[in-house]
Length: 243
Image (cartoon, rainbow, N blue to C red; front, side, top):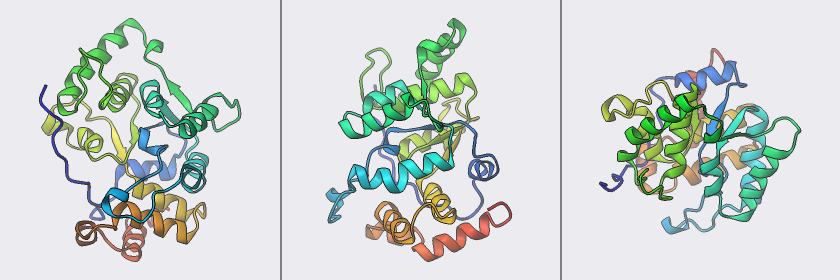
């Protein structure tokens, strides 16, 4: 299997509205599948960030409030298994088992019927060559995202939220790559930050700090992405009619 290609970090796009985000602004109850990084606090200390986010901090400003605004979140069983740190795993498991809305929906491949299972296997074979996952070995690398996307395509789910550039690429460049994921739509973390801030669910300082940490920390990011004020102004213009 060829190695997973190097992917440049996605730049923030303020040139046109994201149809997926526009749809969720009007219908926030749509099912949204999440990648592992939705639950994992960002750590960019390898890029000379002074500190990493703690799970408790990330939970309080990101996971919990966004799940309240978007109450139909789902996680594939393979992604849940990737949460090897006890705290995010236990928190996700508690959301699944709580019995109190909003619950986190667990996507299980065992719930697929035989026809869907065959379709899922075909989809995995189409997606896997652009990742480090090898279905014949069922290795851990990129397994969660491949299995999530294949499951979503089979069940007709539309929205996937991630901060992984390659996972975004599998959907946003589906035509060029031939992943057959054309019907799926991506949601970016910066859209989640904007949604929380504009709905009063994230304090200004927390929103600015998380945005800067994820998108405006390195020189390359500062050269390619808008500063916080310009970002908010650009998003306001894009979504003024529906936000």
